[in-house]
Amino acid sequence: MIRRDIAGRGICDPETLDAMRTVPREEFVPVNLRSSAYYDRPLPIGYGQTISQPYIVAFMTEILNLQPASRVLEVGTGSGYQAAVLAEIAGEVFTIEIVEPLGVSAQTRLGSLGYTNVQTRIGDGYYGWPDQSPFDTIIVTAAASHIPPPLIEQLKPGGRMIIPVGSVMQVQHLLLVQKDLQGKVTQRSIMPVRFVPLTRGSGRRR
Image (tube, rainbow, N blue to C red; front, top):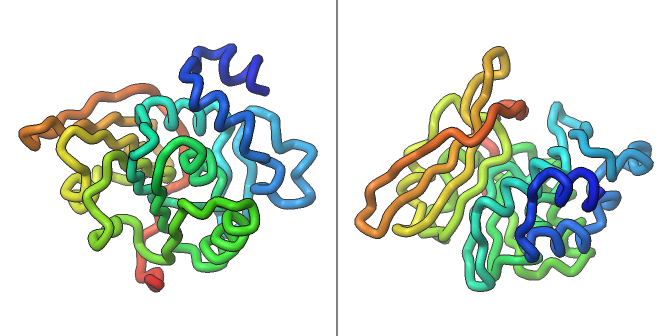
């Protein structure tokens, strides 16, 4: 998988490649789909959600330019796979999931695999995690109709955010959002993508 689908498609950051080699993807997919865990495609994880294809996970990780001291916010924990990849590189990962059963199982899974630098929360990721902000980087793993203003506010000056924007029925674009040291925000489209929609609601925080 690494040679053909990730490095073979241009991912070259050593830390990202090491993280993708290290995290056991089969632990983050349903048991009946483990034989497909290392195919380069998304897989269903229940509740209408998916685990992203390995290439997209690697691409979004690489573009964040993570450092050992980075504090990362992830919106959309899912099964916890992207959080685990981030945690292999960054110092702290804060991840939010609105679907409570997914968030609870991801917390258990990440803990059992030894990811002590990941904190999880059940809640509406649109509003971020204010009491832990600001963040060096933010990654959103579901498509929003627009860039949530609270996430821009919680992005540290000099930080970057990667987020898919668009509706299920239209082309979605993976956007790189950057905030300079003076607080000016710019964005650029990186590639067309297809993600499940960002779920909104009253997911209970805890």
